[in-house]
Length: 219
Image 1 (cartoon, rainbow, N blue to C red):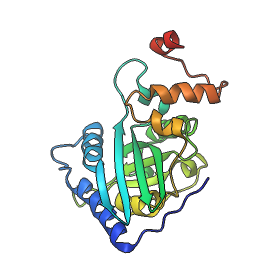
Image 2: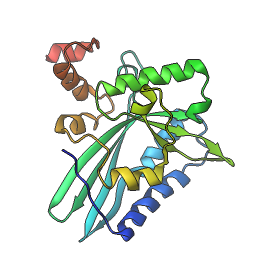
Image 3: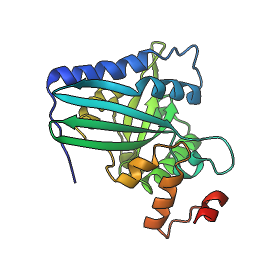
């Protein structure tokens, strides 16, 4: 089901400023490498962007485990998840997206890195219909994260993307983007994504994704 929220300009501007502050709060001299930068960025993004009688927009962010045997990034393709809670009047919805981040512009990646990215997007697409890529080009010394469509990249199409603050206002605040399935939203609240993995395997038994020993025992 597609939901569309139409917020007034003052709420959109509050959300835009919240995201922009998160971007500007990350000093590129202190967080130069991709994992450190992404961790700092999503920490700044988390929280309530707007809350009053006329609406609510808040974010929960998850850094996906990337270290260790069978880490979640290896099988999911994702670096992070963003969950938005959007409320207006009597309507309230939770939507989440999976994102793979790349430092630099995607169209400037070496061929082998681009192929790796395509594989990561393909892995995310097994879990959600709308995988996203966050490219982080550095413009005049300042990282400017942008969100691209993973679906277009898989199809071999170019994606201009949107600057992160504009993407959040245009696609997340309106709830045009994101996965509303409760199992998906619940599954991206933990860095291991273990719950998401189990639900994905139950839904798609033909996808050959090895299950961690701990999950096998519980099953």
